Length: 129
Ligand SMILES: [Zn+2]
Image: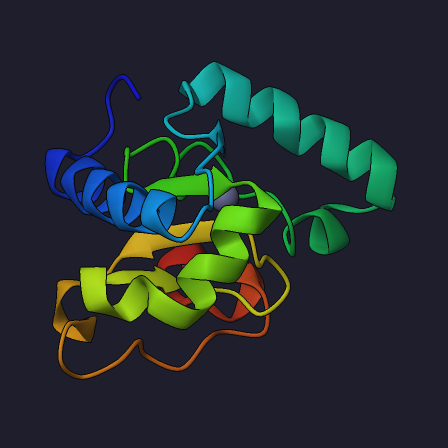
């Protein structure tokens, strides 16, 4: 949980407490990542998917990754299923249709619902840097 945005961490803790009442355990698979680790993941994705373009649908660069900036978490499937139903109440939103495990804080979602998802990160203007 080191280096995560405190507001994101607080929202996750509140959600995890309430999910536990429903018998759902929150597992965070990946939170903050160093730029070096993000670049390693990106290189692995390039060799797995065969091109920079295809890899960009799954892994950001160190300059664009919300994991490197401390603004994203990847969570286990039980927690993701719970958050898909309840996350907006905490401002926790799935951002990309192809990544049901990836959540970021969208405080405006509280009361308004989460914003529409991008199909994958290549459609996210933040990734166009
Ligand atoms: Zn992620």
